[in-house]
View 1 (cartoon, helix red, strand yellow):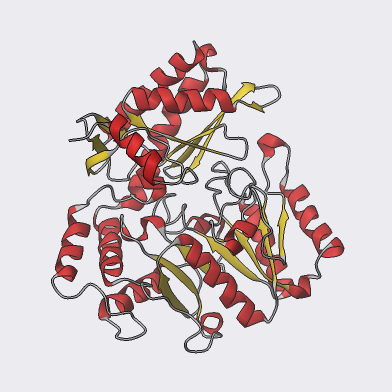
View 2 (cartoon, one colour):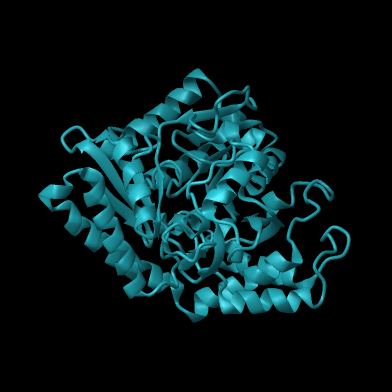
Length: 427
């Protein structure tokens, strides 16, 4: 079998450098929250495929559902011949999504595809073009979703991008942006750049993913709902990374008590199989005429079979409660680390459920981001047997996305590695 170094060279010769890979090793097998590379080295997985594996690698129930579906058929194209698993999953998501109103769901393949279609649906329903998103947001790598993304490096180098997309600051007290300032910036946008009567939707991540796991304050989301109602703007919750039990709720926006008009979902929706969804008000979803929505692989039979199994696992294994307990375990341990003089570089520990962030700074007085230290910690963690990712507008945030099915013992082992790696990186 090839070594990791040999594979790195083959990759360099065959794959463009534009697709970055965080880890310098190659996967051979994975189970729950552990992964082994082609040289037999074991790693604890605190990345979960970038929030794809809330139910862990190869959950037995998910694998069984997909195997059973493979014995029936693997593809028909839903627009040609429909199938019951698609309808069943749509019904279950309609019921699970917040809001006391009729809902409908359509499936796609990727998170970016879901966002593209959510905007398309919003524009159809409102007959408006404008889209408002937030600084630090990440919505995808397609032409439209790059325009919606509020982070230049590395996603938006180049251009031009789709017009009629506007950004306002996301509230972040740590870096000097209050809820009031963010709302004031939105009102300034309505005065200076676009009439709210031309805005189709405001799209928000209840917890920013790539932006640094910044949590949208409850008061802020409630204020957005009020503004949207006032101006007949649709509120879209991007739950691609924060949804499907990660925050202790099925959808992160539930923490605010707000019901959005549209929800986008992907990543952990199908436990490792490609599937995304747009869930929304029935009247809004039905505004697009027949043939206006779809995709050859949209709502793959294998993906929706996995999706139904994921919802079963969340219910049967009580993963909503598990997310809260896991989040508490990690947060308490990380905050205890932050109290040590040795780790004064920990500027903030925050999270919602099991979506946890550690922000590293050069000085707690100024909260100046320390991207170099963050990069060193990620590298040391990998050397010590932990898959760990960074994020943030300033690339100074460690993000913890442990599969919710991981044991406390494994979580603590991973936290031990984080502490050891941070200590080593400071030397």
